[in-house]
Length: 123
Image 1 (tube, rainbow, N blue to C red):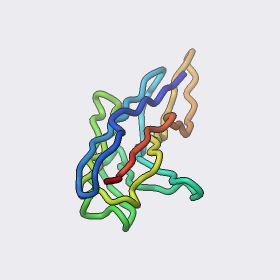
Image 2: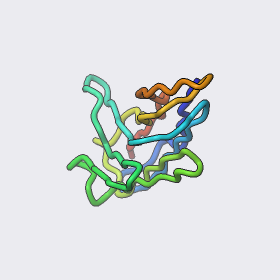
Image 3: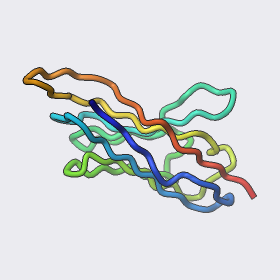
């Protein structure tokens, strides 16, 4: 019904930048909060940044001042600009969205995840 597809991960040196994108598709009626999470090996998945449909933004303390989240509601997309990357930012980054789906006249709200994209910060 709904798919979230991330792109933009890769390998970058410390101090470098990467930009992630995520686009949602399917029987979408509306999208509430969109966000990015990450999971490093041996660690729990954690929130990196989120943005509501009204534009309210929340960042993890560890990325404040370095990462910027934005969204394009017309494209059902969310973006994450990551600057001044550190080795500890290495993780699989997942896109997340709170979506109201409409199918056959029925609306149902759910939490959806992308498959993740690897970000590796290393010299």
